[in-house]
Image 1 (cartoon, rainbow, N blue to C red):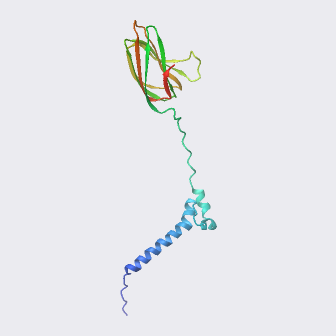
Image 2: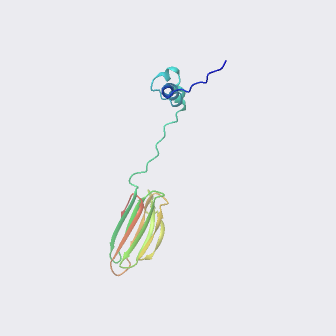
Image 3: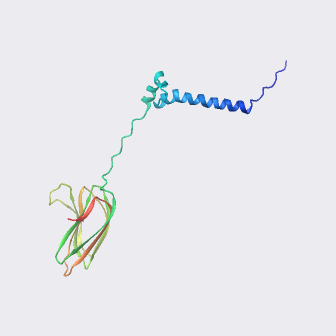
Length: 180
């Protein structure tokens, strides 16, 4: 006896088989896989079969939202100008948190001024401060990172015989800046 060779399925039979496999796979996904793996049960059959409880125990916990910094402490750029008569002094301070940073440049148009760059911790007594730099100069520039929460800035005094204008330009992260 001789065996006849098997015939290859037609394109129509292959298409029908592929569609049938896709339909069966979709049903298995909805009824068993989603309830058991992810705790998602769109048909309710997974709960009836006890599969949803398996998926819920595997589900990761909901993420905890990260704390958001107050909107007042955003990146900003400011310019402050102060006019000082002979013998007059003033302060300009930035409100900063520990770790906030700024880049600054100040120039005294009309001559050198006495300056003290310093900071005062939030809630500290009036005589508690930290001095960062002192001197007499017509200009200074630099970068600064606040070592503590509080106000940080400059005191300028015009020691010359005529008026001067001090122009301060800052860029960085701080809540506000202005005369104190």
